[in-house]
Length: 362
Image (cartoon, rainbow, N blue to C red; front, side, top):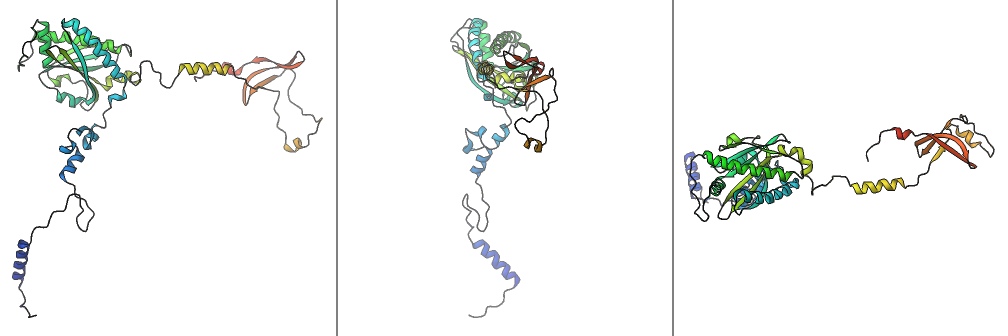
């Protein structure tokens, strides 16, 4: 080969730039493949969205995947309180009857769902305009919240003021509620609160007392924003009218009856079975037990014991009128005096040490 003249620094740099511009762009690494010479794995955007709980990959399942599961992991699931569902089912039946009497109309009440929410998240999700009722649980010394949506407010006002059936749905105006509307809604709330008290009565007597009505959620704060609460959504249908009522009870309010709400059925006793306890007690009373009458106990060296023969005598440090211990195993049950009865050696019980002790529960 012919020798080429040596290139200057400027020519070398120009050649490198020209080669870089002429070379095609390196193909991007395939999704999920590690780069050449390394072990790192590049995640696609869809995989990142799926892990975080966003995007199409997590649609319909956001609350149960990724970071949303971590956020909601501190919430207490209402299913851990099985009796709550029984209480709200009873509330639905009672409200169906009481609201029919209250409105003189055909009313159907249904329970949509029972969920656990954070109090702050629920306040931010309330669609306005709405009325929020703060009520007190007297015996539990805490509060709860009831939300009546605008459709329910105008429906109950229309029904109680004699509105005709079959009319078009009233247009909801962005105006403050009037005094008449607030008074009619308050009457509805008092009926629902009375039914709630009746629904909890078989479990624990409680009185829910109406406190106040608010239209601004900020004025209805009864718990810290991060506190967990039980939310029950009720649907009320009055033929072509109706709306929703939502009852929110913080877990702090339910704490006094938490043990009762943990029952799988009404009247359940945790860890106890009265029938089995009664049977066990009766069988114990009929059990045969071996007892020993101990006159005295002495300590003797082993070499003396080895020298015992028939006829050997063992001296006991007791007198004829000393008490004899009656034992079952190592436990002394009674003490008595030695004697004879019908030609048999007998012990007359003088003391019962165990009966003087307080009885311990089984």
